[in-house]
Amino acid sequence: MTSPVVEDLLRTLAPQVLGVLVRRHGQFYACEDAVQEALLAAATQWPAQGVPDHPRSWLVTVATRRLTDEWRSERARRDREVAVAVREPAYAAVAPPADEEPPAADDTLKLLFLCCHPALGVSAQVALTLRAVGGLSTAEIARAYLVPEATMSQRIRRAKQRIEAAGARFVLPSAADRDERLGAVLHVLYLVFNEGYAASSGGELHRAELTGEAIRLARELHRLLPDDGEVAGLLALTLLTDAHRAARTGPGGELIPLSEQDRGRWDRAEIEEGVALVAAALTWSPPGPYQVQAAIAAVHAEAPSAAETDWPQIVALYRVLARLAPNPMVTLNQAAAVAMVDGPRAGLALLAPLDADERVAGHHRLAAVRAHLLELAGDRDAARAAYLAAARATTSLPEQRYLEVRAARLAAER
Image (cartoon, rainbow, N blue to C red):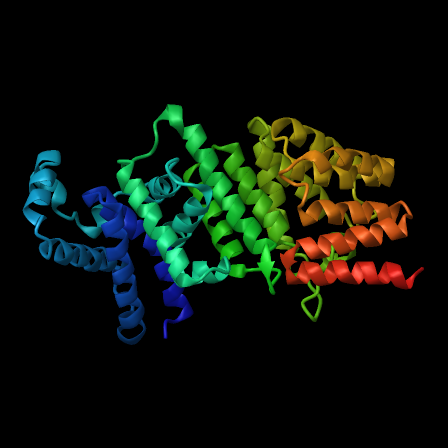
C-alpha cells in the first residue's frame, strides 16, 4: 500500500514528469500513458525500497523507457524517428542531467494550458486537468463525479485524442491568446473546487479530493503567475470558502447554513491568507470577477456573526460583480444580500426575472433562495412549497434533507 508521503510526492511530481516527456517527444496521449505506468511502478517500489535520491529523474527515466518500449513495438517506429530527426537536432533527444532540467514550474503551466485547450468541452477540460495536472487516478475522478470508471476513462481518452487531432503544441499560448486561455484554466479550477465544496449529487456534501486539488493547483498557478490579479483572486476565493468546511456540517452530516455556523470552527489560517491575497491584489490589479467574489467572502469571514456582517458592503460588491460577470447565480446571491439590507420583498423582486431564464428556472438554488426570502417575509405556506420544490429538484442528499427539514419546521409552526 502506498504511504501518504509517497502518494503526495507522486501527485506533485506527476505533472512535472509529464511536462518533461511532452516537451521532448510530443504525443500527449502516449506520454500520459507512460507517466501513469511510471507512477504505478513508483507506488509499488518506493514504499518497500525507499524513495530514490532524485525521484523526478527516476520517474522521467522509467516513463521514457516505457515510451521507448511502446514505440519499438510499433511498425511505424522508423517513420517517427525520421520525423523527430527532421524536427529537432540530435542532441535534443538526449536527456540532460537532473540538475539541468528546465524549471518544473514552466512545464506545469504549459500542461495546465494544454489541458484547457479550446478544442475540448468544459467537462473534458476538468477531467483531463485532474488526471494530468492534479495526479488523480481515473477511478478517483470517476468517484468524485459519480460516473462509472469506464465512462470517465473514455472521456479522458477522447480528450487526449482531440488535443492531438487539434495539433496542440506543448508551449504557452501567445500573448494574444493568453487571456482567453488563462480564463479557461481559472474557470476549470473554479468548477473543480465548487463541485468538491458543494457536491451536485450523491450522499456527501463535500469531496475533499476535489477541493484539495483545486486549491493546490490554484496555489501553483499563483506561484507561476504572481502578477495576475485574477489568479490571486481565485486562490483567495477558494481559501476563504474552504475555511468554512469544518462548520458546514453537523454530527450527522447535516448541512448547516452560513448564518448558523459556529465561526469558532472556521480555519483562521486560511482566512488570514485569503484576506491578505485579495487585499493585496485589489491594490495593484483592476478588479475581476474572482477578486470581487473573494472580497465578498472576506467580508463574511471577518464578520463576528451573521448579524454583524457588513451587508451594505456586500450588496455594493455584488453590484460590481453583476457588471463584471452578469449571470443568474450572481443575481441569486445578490438577491439574498439585498434582502438583508432592504428587506425580503426587495430580494424577491430581484428573483422574479429569473423564472424566465432557462439557465436557472428549474434549478433548486432558485427555489431554495426564494423559499428563504419568503420565510423571512412571513409567507410560511409559500415558503414551505418552495422548500419542497427545491428538495425535489436537487440531487444532493444533504441539501435535500436540509430543505425537507426546513419545510417540515414551517409546517409544524402553523
